[in-house]
Image (tube, rainbow, N blue to C red):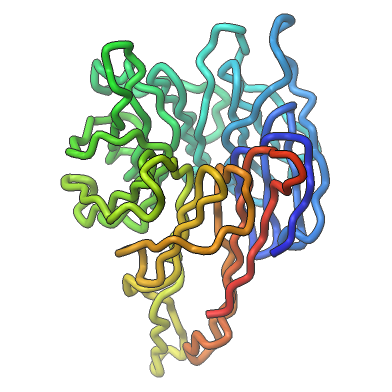
Length: 342
């Protein structure tokens, strides 16, 4: 495990290649690595905010390619770079009372979706700098604070969060789109815990995590969500989850002399959260168990690097790296990289 000390709270990560990644956080902090986290460079955006606004607190980041990416955060700000982070430009008009944005994902082909407080759902299409709300969405979405969004493909996506009305206990909510964010519907699930992260392997299998150390899983696109036994104390909040669904059984076709990786539902997974909580899965996210903590910091995001299938389909040399970031605590590190040989 390696760390990079910092005096700034860090909230999200984006991994672009097997070695290149980004981290964003408070005080207009955007960090870049090209050596899988061994070293980091500060790429403060310099994006302007309103006169009465504090420095930008970036909450989410996503890259479409090594050159093109977006960062979202406080005051409803959305910034774009087209030159690998050398310069950033604001695509929205920030305001002191504007709802903060918490999550963003580039879907490919130029389409991007962002979510945030007060039920904010926004999308931008190919070649357009204009961010627009969806054409259809539940009336109750305005009573939600959306904290994360994930699309396993360009059409199917899920957003999660919690109710924000005084009469509510803050129970979690799940929204789903099947048309790339143009229309959203509310998915029902019985567990009342607040939700802070969501991840889907494909249009059917996915996970959400949040309060009370809870991880939820669905195998039918969110029609039914089931709780995986809490992997952390019920006072712990989980903020991020990563499951290795991109590496599975490698199939070698002797006719074409080509190999391809087909996810078989196995593989390593991890959920992270408050107090340095780390929960591990070794069965493709079917179950999670408490792992040894490597930090006392609250971990806010985790993503994975992977590489190494050989031409004959042998997984023996495959290697995965995890990048986790979190909030600052005295004498603690905030950026953690872990390499796991499988």
